[in-house]
Length: 171
Picture 1 (tube, rainbow, N blue to C red):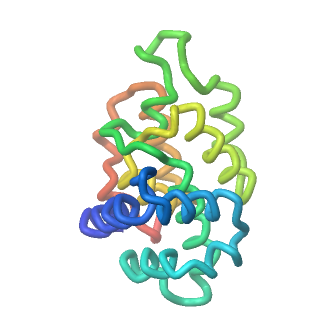
Picture 2: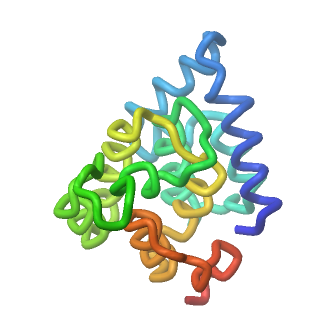
């Protein structure tokens, strides 16, 4: 997902989910949080997101639904990534919002197990994180570089060797 596409994710989220004073946004977010893949794909706004980020075919349905359902958990956009927010405040501190054991379990999980853990982690992060980056991460959820960057984010390491622009489906 290019920087242009991540901006599109943020724009979609701001327009359709973020404004909790808007009953339509509240309703869509609530429906998506409770939805399975088919119920999520039955929402017109989810297909708008798919068109924005190039997930428009039947083979993209599960991934698109997962992205929309997970973004619906976020209530506030932040400059910090999800795992930067969840990790310790300093590299050697023991004050992480998400324990190392749960973080490791999340990394080892796959499919629905990992998505459920991410959705719970969003709640632990006070439902606040960088929405554009989360959208990119969800697009490349099974990519090794995405998981590596999460580790650097969590432990507050220098992740300059693994930049978001380096992540592609080929890896």
